[in-house]
Image (cartoon, rainbow, N blue to C red; front, side, top):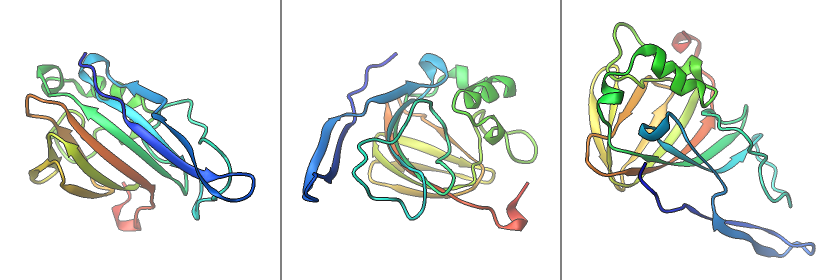
Amino acid sequence: MTDHRPVRRIVTGHDADGRAIIQSDAPVAFVRRVGGAIGPLFHEVWSTYDTPAPIDAASEPDETTLTLAPPPRGTRLRVLDIPPEGDEIRTMSPEAARAHFAEIGAVEAAGHGDGPARHALMHRTETIDYGIVLEGELTLIMDEGETVVRAGDIVVQRGTNHGWSNRSDANCRVAFVLVDGEYAPDLRR
């Protein structure tokens, strides 16, 4: 397993007199690896639990389990460290892929699409996701087509079936903002 530098999180807030303060400045506390040594490292940065998001003096969202999707009517900000992909992923069975998604409470997201999957970890969530590559590169794989995204590139993922493949020889760090969504009736499966 490769060591990764921590993700620094600065959270602002208000003191008892309503003045703006830096509430915390520390590495993200909730970090989990999914899928063993070959899987991505999730740095759970922040979540909101409603829209509009309440702005209050609360210090921290209650995060005790790793969940792929944001809360209903909420958002989730996470940073993923995705290691280079090896044969363990390229030859992964559909059952093993579902087990990976089960680790993040999203077994229903795995394996969508018609016919054989273009990547073992293809998935679809009822969310709008903003993915910002911070370092390295990933290949975004769709049902039809794929493209390489590099540091500085931004992907707007609109509830589509997709997979991520790190075909390079270095870690890829990507920030995701996930926003709870709702499929139009013609896109429901």
